[in-house]
Amino acid sequence: MHRGWGAALILFAGAMRLPAADDAAVFNQYCALCHGRDGRAQTPQGRKLHAKDLRESRLTDAEIERQIRQGSKTKSGISQMPAVGEKLTDAEVQAAIRTAKSFRPAGTP
Image 1 (spheres, rainbow, N blue to C red):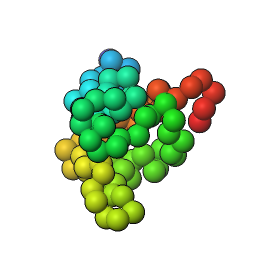
Image 2 (spheres, helix red, strand yellow; image 1 turned 30 degrees about the vertical axis):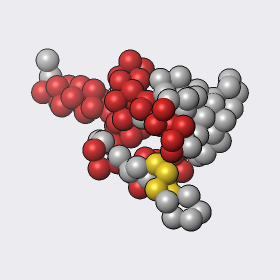
Image 3 (spheres, helix red, strand yellow; image 1 turned 135 degrees about the horizontal axis):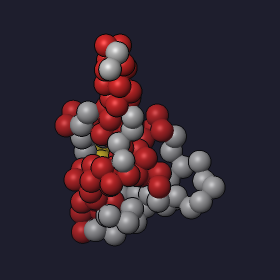
């Protein structure tokens, strides 16, 4: 194998996105406690925190990322969604975003 090919393959492999199974694993580990594995937010913790049903979410990728990294608060300043961004790699944040958006009806951006 040509020396340059090895480096190119390593770079390409690192740039590939996580498979869907890994996307779901990230979501299930960090998001499902509140949003549920089905995204409907009908878990005890989700009801307690008034988590959003992800089927109804229309947030952009940037808005979802901000909430993952920084959390969110109600208008009165009460923490609604805890920040989990410090626990996640950039690839894991993108996996969580993809999974959160996968609950939306077909054709919804």
